[in-house]
Image (tube, rainbow, N blue to C red):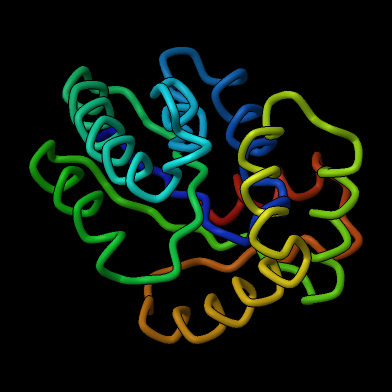
Length: 180
């Protein structure tokens, strides 16, 4: 049975890194990052939130198409509202796939520091989205996301939590695999 594996967590926590490792080690897995899809739409930096809605619709269609081939989809995507998750759960159900949500988490100060370090490096894969986050408050935004996730988690009884504090990416990856 194919799985839609949703890696949730604050900006800069390592979702994309873990998703990439998962896809690279499992032939046929689609690494479906909505942040990368949004960057394919012209004018997205100026209309990020409007464009993000269109990118999510594209991501849903891509996930459904790929799950129907019988292969897993790993989706590194921040979600702080149950309403944002429901369409992905519905896609998995329609495809006879399993939906698994894993929240990558760290202490609020650690999460903010990780984002700041990544943004300072100018990581090309995340640069555009990091710029949007920085324009809206940077580390303060990441700290608000941390609080929103703390409020969101009790609503997600089946969500698995993987702490990332003090762990290298490979350790976090092993913890994610164990959780699956």
